[in-house]
Image 1 (cartoon, rainbow, N blue to C red):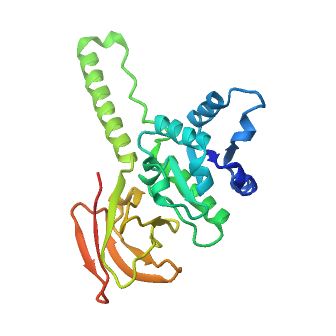
Image 2 (cartoon, rainbow, N blue to C red; image 1 turned 60 degrees about the vertical axis):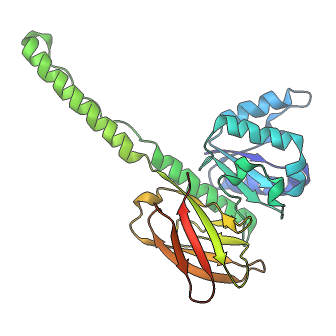
Image 3 (cartoon, rainbow, N blue to C red; image 1 turned 90 degrees about the horizontal axis):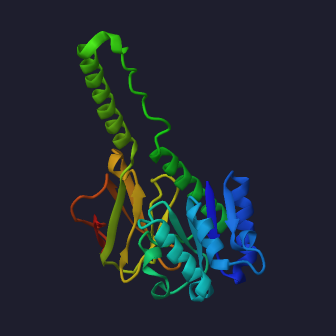
Length: 271
């Protein structure tokens, strides 16, 4: 998968380490300095690279969010993917005020590594690559061949009916192959200590989403088909694990849950 890595120049060394790890994992990682020659038309080349990428990864830092060229790359990504789910991966590389992060990135929530940054980001990219691959049918079923014209109008009518059935089957097959995104809103109604993020340890790779004003915006692809229960776990600002809750499937109506120790949350669908 081709991954465009956006970063500020203050994070050049970290971006190099991340790009090398992504390449070692089999991805095609692209940094801006790899594709823009000195004196070249910077913005046009970056736009072309983003348009040909499968994923845009943004290393979120206070410095990066102030850089005009990073803001331009975010706008290029918005033009490329109006829906950023599994196409844009914002990673909180250094703590950054959420108010300084563009809403487009916060639509999918900003991931915050809890351990080794590079290793966790590579795992997230691997998981996104797998979901992208699963969302694209490898090849549609071939329609049956038409009979020779010598069989007359009756055979032609039969062939037309068979072809129509084949097209209907192909359309149904492609719809089945397309996983649906599950967009959620998680609100903390009461808690002894306000959490800073929420983890989903039982869904694919471990994913973490930040809270802003007591609200987090998780998103998962294919969760509507998951019959097994899954878990969310609140994480406190000092890294301690807080309350744990269990759900099943993608929420279709608001659901309130209480852990019995003063923490109450609401999980609801997000349009």
